[in-house]
Amino acid sequence: MDQIAKIKVIGVGGGGCNAVNRMVDAGVKGVEFIVANTDSQVLNASRAETKIQLGTTITGGLGAGNNPEIGRASAEENKKDIEEIIKGADMVFVTAGMGGGTGTGAAPIVAEIAQSLGALTVGIVTKPFRFEGKKRMEQSIVGIEELKKHVDTLIVIPNDRLRDLVDRSTPILEAFKEVDNVLHRGVQSISDLIAVPGLINLDFADVKAVMEKRGNALIGIGLGVGENRAIEAAKQAVLSPLLETSIVGATDAIINITGGSNLNLFEAEDAAEVVRTAANNEINTIFGAVINENLNDEVIVTVIATGFEGNDPNKLNDFPSKPTKSIDQTDTIDSEFDIPAYIRDRSDI
Image (cartoon, rainbow, N blue to C red; front, side, top):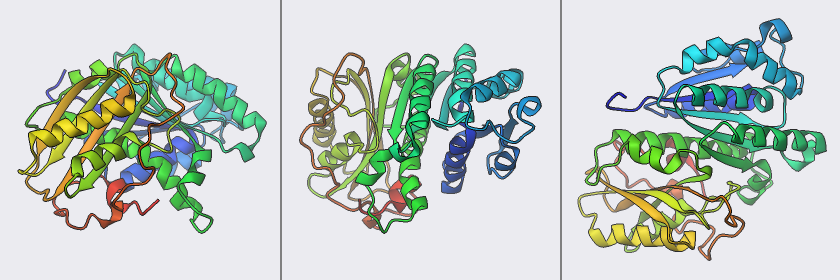
């Protein structure tokens, strides 16, 4: 394995391609972007550096027609191409919108290939809105169950949760950016964890220990300021209103805290205690701490939690559902510090 792990993000189908495009636009660093689709028009318009046309002989480049079996067969047709492009990756994120044809059918094949090549494989997928109909919802559930067989960890985002984050005046493109924020969060946080030297260092082996063969996962990041900044950042990190899984019942977690030179031991302890309390369990934690001189009064906490199988993930502890400070008020952070775009750009929710 190279000194810095190779991370690849593969967007499968129309929803996956859109998510990757927005990540490219947001300037997410330290990863290779790949898109795979049966629809040649959508594929050619993608801003990803690597593109895989799926199922040309089956679909003629016209898409899977909302049929997961066609999506699956198309991925099988180009299996060798997928293998060649994934080869060498230490970690692969597979993202897709479930319920349609290509994402639902092809994403499990892509994930299966990634796992067979030895990559730590993480799925981040969406479930359709209920108003999209029973058939699409049923297809998404079947696709998610199939994908779960071939990923180490899985993050599921029900699109219906968007209603908790936006109001009637919010444009639809802005609403879907909230979904993409979860992908940004997962990819950029992990890239930073293994690439940025820390006071207490974390590496890819730490990430793998928490995420390998662990089922449902939660990945969150929070920012806090002021007297209780570490506590507030940790609360934000464990609150994920878009995710189908809450941190309740998690058995393992990576906690990484980043702050300026005034970051102290008690704040690190406070952040870890928030995560343990929220998980409502004797959670096993791997802790990292990074000092960044460009941070002034701000603290950033990243949490990757796993091990939910057999636990009840339906209820969060009594933490406030909104951050105490608006994310878009973080203008005191030095512009040289590479805060992920979803923190810089996200407005009050």
